[in-house]
Length: 630
Ligand code: ADP
Ligand code: MG
Image 1 (cartoon, rainbow, N blue to C red):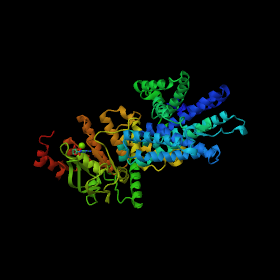
Image 2 (image 1 turned 180 degrees about the vertical axis):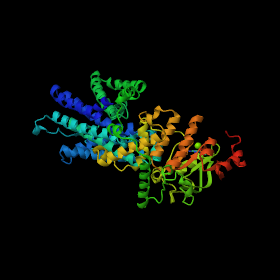
Image 3 (image 1 turned 60 degrees about the horizontal axis):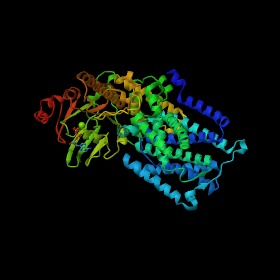
Image 4 (image 1 turned 45 degrees about the horizontal axis):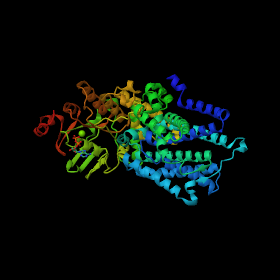
């Protein structure tokens, strides 16, 4: 641990960049300075592209177009507007940033394949525009700009450009590390790997994506500006087609989802490219073969492979220092905070009553007060809700309400509409008709994100953890919806940001302790058994401090022993945390033993509602299960 902390990515970057700053201009001729500058520019491209196609997995092929927009914006700024480079480069980058937002618009709607194709079309369109832009773009021969003059500070044009680019890229990498190690980076990974989860946890998926496109566009536009600074011109060929593949390779070869991967990939491939060019005409083939080799033998890239071999080297995604010093929170404090949060929502008028019943395990009498709350309004109400999928009526005119502080079991044969019911209550599926009330407020048709922020959290039938986040980080996603600090605060490391980060860690540790999974906190999300993942998912729900938890078949695939402890855990959710639980389950014994009341669905209709004892004895319930298992 101490070695990896002493050699934090930040330290390594500073040492490396310092060495480059000293070595390159003094020990190489101008070609060496040129190649080093190009490497740095490509590092910037790789980092920005990695945000998009690595972390957030928005498969855009429009990055080259944004690069060109940054370059041409810079060149046009100097040539047509008479701006100095220091203003022209930010001007070009701003244009590319706006371009990034434009690319984001289709990306928010299109599936991966269509996004790739439509952004490729955009790239070709921009290329065409540059070729036919007349005096504005200089057509096929491009815009000649002339180098910036650094004589005033005693540097040649090459050296001046090199140092400027080096300084900018170093600062950007350091900022990128910080942001990727924060909740913003975790959000991006969650959106990239498990978008449904992000929405269900109240992470602002839409906003995050737009911001990633904007920042990514800004950075690649900056790279375009630097390229003009380095070359002294912008021409259509420098910025096209082969670059679509090259940019992609920077990220893949280095290792997606690692900032260090982008650095390694860009430096390695730029060097390779310059070398292969000596082989006259074979360089494109060489590049193609290299890409194939990596895809086949090292799909996770160089840094990805290293990180798998040496876990201590794994880029630490939550501030390691903070995590080491943070203890698990205490139940009473977490409950207090949850109450305060929901009260705050209440007084803002954004939500009416999101009740957190008293923590029964911690009150004076030790008697659960869930039962005293019968007169309180229901936490969820479905009023005449129907949903069909094509010809299938998944839910037919459902009237249901669930009172606070209790465990509500929902059973029914396969395909009876249980998951659809949960999906509707959590906003993942919109009802065709009828309305939905959450905490006494009409939320029909609202997004999952909004429902999550109103106080609902759910698990999924097919368990979903974010594979490349650790268990602790996965659980931290639960309370992400309460974060107020953004990317800038994370980059600067403001007091609010650090406080929230520490709180998220301590809440996550408390939640992991609640489900007895503390010892696994440093495992990756994909290194657990199915049963363990279930528990982590429940911990994530607990960490979200939501008054209402929906569980979709949490016992599926668990052994009898584990089902027993799951039952105790669910009872503790109610008794110790005062949470309302809606439990959809196939394992009838679990439902009968844990629930306060049971609802039976069959073919999209409620055929029974009553106590577990009544359900056991009911003729209709039994016949609904005849022919179905159990
Ligand atoms: P359960 O969870 O009780 O097994 P579901 O709610 O998953 O049942 O499904 C109810 C019915 O709706 C089934 O017939 C299922 O095939 C159908 N259904 C559910 N979701 C979809 C979907 N996204 N597209 C098409 N049909 C669906
Ligand atoms: Mg289901």
